[in-house]
Image (cartoon, rainbow, N blue to C red; front, side, top):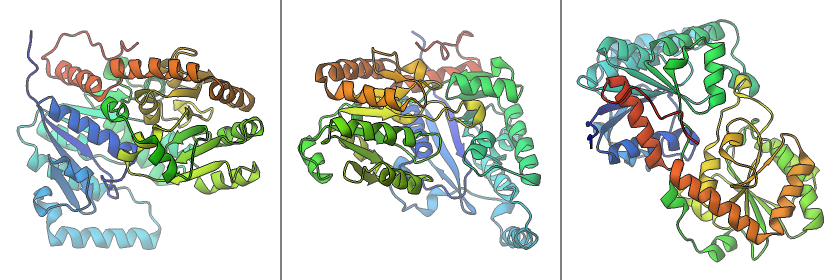
Amino acid sequence: MTLTPRLNIAHLYQESGIRFYEPHAAQLHIYHTIRGLQQADHEVTLLALQGRDILCTKDLQAFKSDKLQDNQYCQLGWSGTNLFKWFESGIRRLQSELRLPYLALFDSYRMAEASSINLKGFDLIHERFNLLALGGAWASKKLGIPFVLEVNADLLEQRKFKGTPERGLRRLFAVWATQVCFNAATKIICISEGLKNQLKTKWNIDEDKLAVLPCAADVDAFGAKHDTEAVRRGLGLTNEPVVMWVGGFYPWHDLDLLLGSFAQVVQKKPNARLVLVGDGQTRTLVEQEIVKNGLQQAVIMAGTVAHNRVPELLSIADIAVVPSAPVSASHGGTGTPLKLFEYMAAGKAIIATAQDHAAEVIRDGHNGLLIETGNVNGFAEAMLTLLNDPAERFRLGQNARQQAVALYSWEEYTKRLEEIYLNILGNAPSKSLVNEIS
């Protein structure tokens, strides 16, 4: 048996406003990636932009508290001097006065400089891709170490779909910066086959450079037992049947479809309740849609909750839903939502729209039900069918749980990620199993 060599890995994320303790998908994914690699006995250091400082820490406490210590920040060179900060402030004021676009060049320089100073002796850089972020690409070139780029969406297309497209000079720069990062990457990890195809066709990336690695779930946390009566009481529920959705309120989640179909459900099952967990861009529109459908008494808006509370909330769900808008990766879709794997790990009966990678993960009638996108009547019928059939809900949930444990745990994710790293570094067989996920 060949032992996996211990690697020294830098995990980068360049977004100035990120708060790692918040329960959003990016933070959760970064946390579990680092934790999994550390548990596999690798050295992993998080480098992340925090205003005009760079967080540099191995301590996962950064994901649990907003209280960071001074010794958790990087040593900086020129970008940490008062003269540099004065110059930076002047340029930013000038940009604002002239209404010139912000291009994050100071941020990229600061990230690249901090990485170059603090990452000597590291084996590779792993960066979660963010628009305009050039720090990781520049640092990997200066240090001469491999650069693994994790891409979760075509961000230019996603911003267009969200109604905030990049325009003018900033768009030109964003296209150039994206191409620089893609060209610099030794390997690009995509969240789904659809996204892989988008990067291959739109950005002309060689297929050999692309690997598919879907999201995962904490199968232990989501498989734990909870006091369901207490959870119900906390939401003002007793014994009502519950349909649950968890996630960010963004346009690629088709909550209009969900609310329209649930309105049909309550006509035949008046005591049914829909629990929406999360917040985001389209919340106001969702609230308007709830009123429009007359669902004020049937829908519970739980709001944003700490991620460690999601398993207990899911414990009361009879059905968990993944309604996705009919938008592909080429038009801003994100691939596979994290919630899908967490539903599976929780052993829930899942109803999903047959969109993107969800259609590959869910086998209709085996570990969930698939409904065509936009099919309000079909989604309503599927919910009613499962609400009236506890045995079928249990069977679908058990099959989903078994698949999550076998294929979509963070432990399995870490093993596949290790294989990508080792193939890059020349310490593993040339044939990768990463895309052979059934």
